[in-house]
Amino acid sequence: MPTGPMPREMHPAFEAAFNRRDLDGLMALYAPDAAMPRADGSVATGLDAVRQELSDVLGTNGQMRLRTRYVYEAGDLAALSCEWTLTAGDQTMSAVSAEVARRQPDGGWLLVFDHPFANLEPEQAAAVGPAAASSGR
Image (cartoon, rainbow, N blue to C red; front, side, top):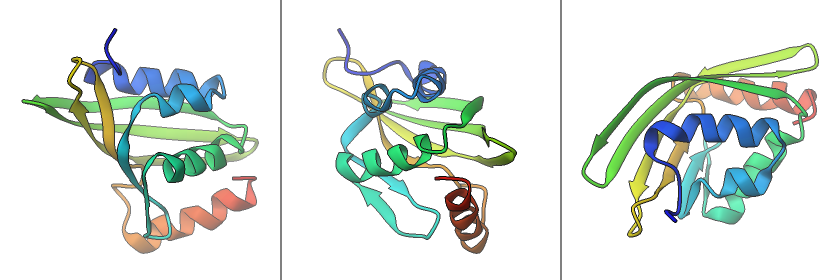
């Protein structure tokens, strides 16, 4: 059985795992060397750091909706992007992501880079962090 889903299945798998509050299911989408830029401009690197970021977002008890913008494969790499919206209580946040997935030796795919705020300038992304924190993130 392949390690992770095909690139076109990545966003639906993420949305489903998030809305089930399945942290292990989310982590199954990431490579051991995955990196995720944070709203404050630093980068979460490695599974433990990515797990903490995702755990914090799951703590909002919100619902996530993703709309895939594109998925392009080139050899053993795939570039992906989606529009995401997180609704937690009366708070709604949205942005556009940029991700890179890498084909694994068994034919599955895992995310190696997941930038959830790719459409925002650094100061805009930083403003998202405190807003999310005040809603329980």
